[in-house]
Image (cartoon, rainbow, N blue to C red; front, side, top):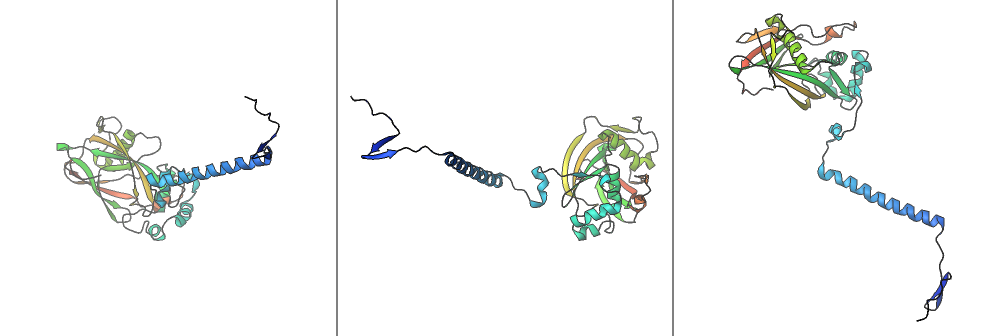
Amino acid sequence: MSPPPPINGSHRLNNKPCVYNPPTLPDIFLTALSLLFLFSSRQAHQSVSFLPRFFSFPPKHRRFLGVSSMSLTNSNFPTPQALSDWLKPRLPSDSFASWGVKPGTKNVHNLWLELSEGETSLADSSPPLRTVNVVTVRIIGKDNRVLVESRQELSDGSVRDRFRPLSEKVKPGENPEEAAIRAVKEELGSIIGGGFGDGGVVKIVPGSYQKKVEERNSVSYPGLPACYVLHSLDAWVEGLPEGEFCSEEEQEYEDADGSRALEKAVSVRKHYWKWVSPDSNHS
């Protein structure tokens, strides 16, 4: 067998000379760029078409996508008017106009005070999302009946139906048990009297703590979505009447900065309570 012919940069194909020309650097670069563009386009198409198959995100609920929003506090709003000016373009005009006017609602001064106390934060979005930690105290009485607040009488003369256990916003630095004891003192102190803080009046039921998160439109602030982080506790409270009764609430905030927001805010004057069976449908 004869050896193969030497490779000298050219050979014959069908008796025609064929010369090999190596690719130049621009040719290699353009080829690589074309392949990269093709691969990226396919990946982008796959990622876009993948999401709708498994997830459906309503346009107004983009916060569920995990997109972080700046959390705003009172330092962003030096006055209630500054807060009002910020809210107006971000809320439905008819909803915002009903704040403090529609019976049972609060006004922008209330929201500003909540921000001042660190009880509430607002996400910088449209509409803004109000996040608030709330402690719910299920007070257990005779025959395991549960104390619920049937209604509230507000400072503007309106009455707001409730039918839920004692609830109060958690202040910064409080744990749920501390917030529960303070809530009982504020809303039932006029009936019980003193003795708070020594474990003699309010006793938390061991193992009763539960936590859940709910998102819904706020009744107090129409048009403003709210995320409620709910801390629930059962408690025994001494000195409560066995029948229906009414209590007066202590002043919730102090007007330390002289802004007069306190006197313009809608506050709760009286709470009306009654005992219900433990299987009653209440929040």
